[in-house]
Image 1 (tube, helix red, strand yellow):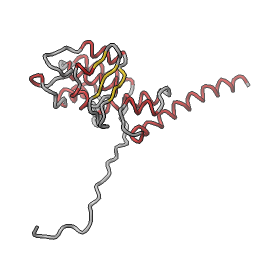
Image 2: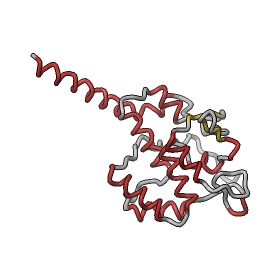
Image 3: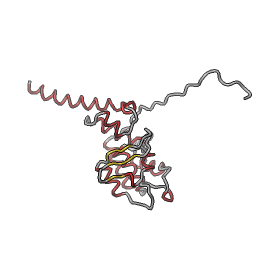
Image 4: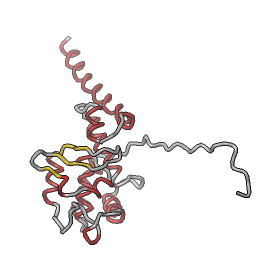
Length: 201
């Protein structure tokens, strides 16, 4: 208290969080090959699950066997970033990963040391990324979540509300970053019809 407090408030810089990380088909193929070749199967399966479901890294760390309902085909995400526990559908690709995941003596699907909750996966994940030759700035887990979302949006078959629910976004604001990808897919579909009509006339 030797000097007076500031007479103005310092504005926090806004983070440009609108970046969408993508992978080409060739990069995805190399990633899968690198995962299969890597000795750390737990982290490899975590990366696959991030790609197949769009789950966040923290949600994968928290995932317990009791949260997986094979009969109904759903995964319960306890206390996701949006705050409220939610369920996401488990597609066949995700289910196949969970079926081959080795059950250790732990309640966690991807346990850390001593069967406790995992707190880190950076070293093996970055090794897999490097061996796959992915871009330097690609984030192994969050980037794969982006790939899941952008793939769904660009298919033209998933509406923004459904994508919001799949990504467990609390509001549609975060999901809107993928809207242009869906628009591009719809334009392509429209052009297909246009081409057919132009050939007839």
